[in-house]
Length: 155
Image 1 (cartoon, rainbow, N blue to C red):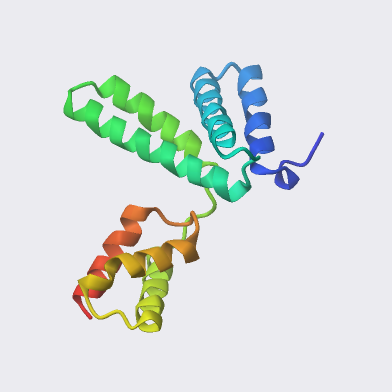
Image 2: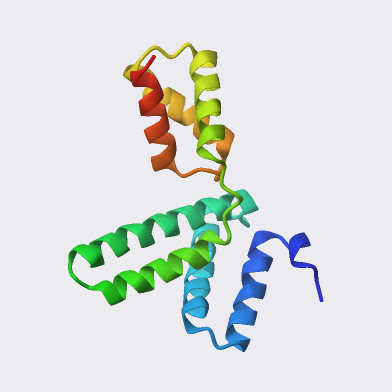
């Protein structure tokens, strides 16, 4: 049996799908099948096999979709559907790299603001782009945006 830590991310997902099928975990099976389908679609679109970093980007997009769907279901009074979306979200979050803490993110943002000489909200896009490049999947865009906005309004 292969060591899961040495597998590329796509291999880990396929291995987890097989385990979920064996344990008859329907929600995990359907979530992972859909995730692998999204990865395959992206590979077809780009014409090449996705790297782990690209797969993390696909995962982040899928997580964002689940969060938005859960919120929409909740506002529509469909709690059961919202809970299903949140269960899928939890499964997908298992494929993201360890997230950085708010303190680490705040320090990175401060360093980049200093490095770029950013002096207000006009530089927000530039700062967010630089921060996202540095944290690569370890923080979501909404969190980065909030921290950058907070820092730039206090510059």
